[in-house]
Image (cartoon, rainbow, N blue to C red; front, side, top):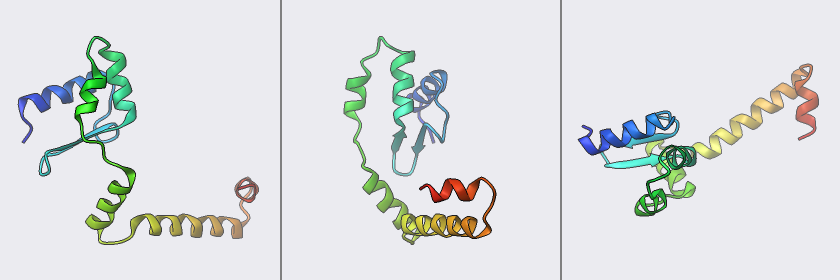
Length: 109
């Protein structure tokens, strides 16, 4: 359940133009927030009188490596490896079909 302070922060982010689920999220079980760089920029532009640098400094920063490890743990599979393999397979398939426009663009990569 979201507390009043969390709800007010949610409202501030939406009013600034951030999109829930894309620009920010809240995990009530872990009591954790996730804010995208875009969300931080929107807050800074929409509420310039607030010292967002200090506010953001108070948040614990997670790394992409930590996020990927958490995703792998949650899914029980090496998601990053699987998605890369899937994309490569799809690209090879498109090349074999020799689809107009796609094959020429893919061969440049």
